[in-house]
Amino acid sequence: MITIDADAHVVETERTWDFMEKPDQKYRPQVVSSPSEPSKYYWMVDGKIRGSARQVVTAGQLDDLSSKIGRNITTPREAREMENVGVRVKHMDELGVDVQVLHSTIFIRDFVSKPDSEIAICNGWNRWLADIWQQGGGRLRWTCVLPLRTMDHAIQQLRYSHEHGACGVFMRAIEGERVLHDPYFDPLYEEAVRLNMPMIVHIGNANTYTSELLSQFVGTGSTFWTIRLMTVGACHSIILSGLMDRFPGLRYGFVEASSQWVPYMLADLKRRLPGLGKQYRPDLLKQQRLYVTMQSDDDIDYVVKWAGEDNLVIGTDYGHTDQSSEIEALRALRQNEQIEPRVVEKILDHNPRALYGLSV
Image (cartoon, rainbow, N blue to C red; front, side, top):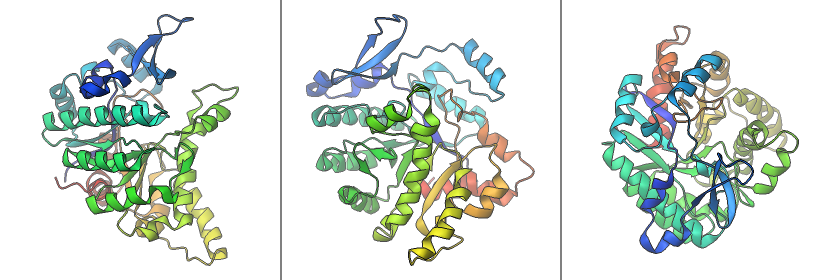
């Protein structure tokens, strides 16, 4: 048995864009300060503010926050920002983690809006992760970000990423003006199946209008509605659309939205599908090749009753400090005596291995 962290992160810094090719440096994201709050910094891309940058969090602040929320979220800065891959791997050893699958932080929302800059920025980001993978000796796998506005370039970068350690494609629940079962993505799915690469819907929303609409009066921190619940709708719609039947080799993962929503979704489909002339099966997630990350405080017995044992994985959200972050999550699951060892082994090893197509 090995232990696979299905949801870990890299935190982008100015150094990330050093991996952009020289002709593409004109598209390089810039860090700017806020005129009203000079101590706060943001990314500027395509002439627009695209989210926070230079998030300086001290070890003491992380320890204080960990104490308040009752979960360990403390990580070394040089590890989460990938300035020192050796430090990251050493911390994985301390946590008892053999393999981490790395996801982007800044691409959770729409980070770039113009096709040319999207091609250049995605290419640089993927080159950065390829370098990290090479330094990590196979223990740091990753999901690639693709310039989905230009499908030919997206497929080119998919192939490059596959050759350089990527084991999935980073997606958002809404990609610009498109839902995930839009036929526009069919060429991507065809190539992903050929390369044995799953689609990974990390909590996110690349549609600026819906993000701003759902953030009214509660601010951009309202991620529950703007990005977490979007994941539930995306999974439900993928099942109803027949996408997975059209692409028998395709796999989808839904990451960082907990797993408590799975029984709710499946109960709805159990009532809904017969009226549409479709059969509901108790092993629907397995039959549809859909995987979901759980959290250590989920009602695991209840979720397993609905979802089965073969399609749940778990992650630490390494590098972040939000409600999903728990550096000891995998260890907590391993030590949970109320869960059968067989189920624990599936969640930590067999299931993420199947989702990401890992041979380790």
